[in-house]
Length: 241
Image 1 (cartoon, rainbow, N blue to C red):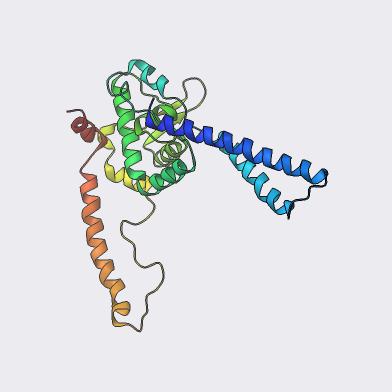
Image 2: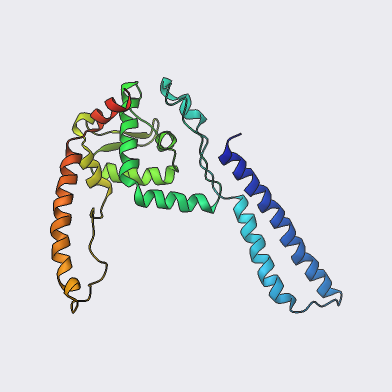
């Protein structure tokens, strides 16, 4: 049993116990009120107990990521596919983790997805579902589909519906650079200035923005030049060594 599955089962067990306890408390208070044993401010307690019970019941139905076992069997892929780690979304903490990952690692997720699509193509399976790609990235398919959507809009992947639905590279991996990936999924600048205008009456506040702009432009130019020299194909070759 994996740690993530163990934690998930413990959370569901706790949610079950909390649901039963809170609902039973609410029912008991209603019966006691009807038989003349009025508690002090029972409405306030019920107002707290019943919503908590509903929240605990909702936690039981918290969506989990789909089983990844089918990925190990698809298209004859073996080796790294057979060793994919299990993952699951077991509670609110996982949602926070996924949102943070989506905000901070969009380029990494996109590059991983493209490399996996290229490896699958080389092994005779050019089309993969979002679940199959998410299994390699070890992230929730919802986040992965957002990344694939950005890549599709940029012309780096293509999608098809119906029988054999999935995603595939839209052009050769040798022609997809990391700069292409960066431009596709990262709408924010590499380095940003203040969110609000600094104090212009301060000598530093009045002059820091033009200076930082020059520094950031130089750094961004070097960063983009480095990304343009790496392709998905060349990275995959290094990965497989």
